[in-house]
Image 1: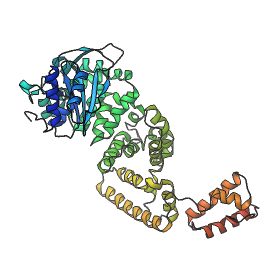
Image 2 (image 1 turned 90 degrees about the vertical axis):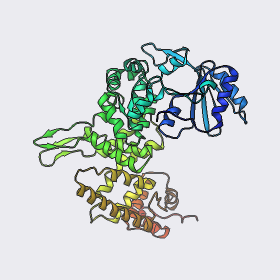
Image 3 (image 1 turned 180 degrees about the vertical axis):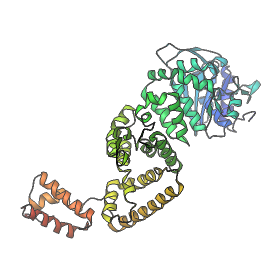
Image 4 (image 1 turned 90 degrees about the horizontal axis):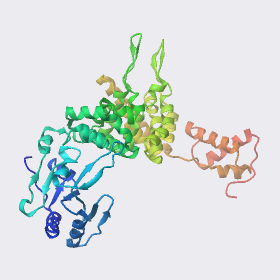
Length: 475
């Protein structure tokens, strides 16, 4: 990894030729160069020129076969165009200065050296020349390549200044460490600890964007441990930080729910890239601190933590600026149901209990089972093996009952409209009671979800309530 070679692609020659025509020096810089060195796929190219980046972008577009549209962002002095599957952003070299209570810098024209200095980390301060005299030559003023070999995240300048100027970089340092499995240099990590309070000037949206990237990293627990050790987690997501710690009463100790949660998250990450399933893992035990009790006879309990946790999900999503849509409802459902399959591992489990789980989980049953398998984190291997074998049995029963009863997302064949028409009722509590009784009977297996049998049950139940059949359905 002593040097980095540009990919064979005409876009680089086109930019080089356009830069020569405009009379500016140009360089590919930043994340694209880093990913080249790490052999990670990337189609986003950042081009820095010592001059006018917007003018260079216009010239490049003119030289490309399809004359792609140039999107100009005048406030930032940047321009962007697409060439096939490549996205190229152009900017003039800049230097920046910050005021204390803002992460928006004062920007002025600068040299390549100035531009590299303002980069967040040495691994992102690499460049490759597109100039005729030095085409393809690596620019590495801050030993970024060496840090990449050593797997180190380090700032080009004094880290305290870097993080105080733009506190989001503290989240980015941890995100890169988590994504790349790199260490953060000791002085860099110390500066995160020293500057952690500065994170309060960053918008929640930007923080959550970095947090989601940590959640999606190959082993997300690493990022969360760094967030916790730095003190950032306690500021940006205090409810998760509260999971940490154990209490002992009369020799009885409960497990540390923070580290258990991280193990569950890693277990889910091994089987799914779904961001929301991973969030379900993060939040599945979030209410344990609020429901923790000690009883003389049974020790530590967390009764009702799944229901309490489900009720907490909307506010947590709102506070973190996560979407309050079907993704939130999915997480809420999995938090509420995450203990249910564990209760089904007994040999005596009834078809009725299986039906209810299928009815409540619907299309999310597979995701729920992934979360439940991930939730088995005992250090006792034989215990884990036994639980997982029991889950195999539960999943087999789920498939069998689903095939015979078709209960996933089922709706009773008798609708509220049919009930109202049959007994000439207006929308009322009685209609709800009849519908509920029918649903219960189908879930219990005493009535099949078929029209004839279900309608006969409805007439019988109506009679018990003193109702008389007035119409036949569809009459």
